[in-house]
Image (cartoon, rainbow, N blue to C red; front, top):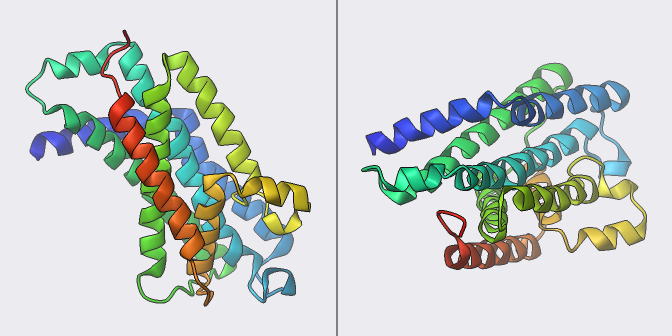
Length: 248
């Protein structure tokens, strides 16, 4: 366990030093919140069902952070390690092989959590953010969202034939999810055809689940949960079969 924690610390330091990951995980969501919060404030509005704009944006932006860590950083790091034969070298050490994968999950989970805290603290201090979730509903939704999207990221890393292909696949997956799921632009403002397209993107269900549990909306979350569990199980299963420690 000590070796796993030390490896996780190293992975976390390496990731935080990556400017792109650090910016889009920590700074970009906060900047977006400050910009749109400065424009719309956080007064209750009928457009968001009587909730404030910031109260709706924060859980949506948490979905954005999960997408950055799970769909970009996680798969690209693993693909790069495989491409540079770092994974193969790890296999020759006394470390248990699964430590490498677990440390990646733990490091990206920590980054996601830090991004969440920065976002929530900013929202509370500047705009009087409200947290309306009942019981552990939001925490459970957050955990399911992370593991579902992270498993999708592992799928990308597992099926990509090389690091360049992993980068291309990650970008093709990430950017539509970023802009067509409500993670950055509210689905309420989109035309019907784009809303229909969003139903085919897993991050849509992450954003919907996080937003509704955060706001304490009394409705069934069955569809969101079922879709995310399916994504988790299918992605994990395929990854377990297709994952390789080195390119052949």
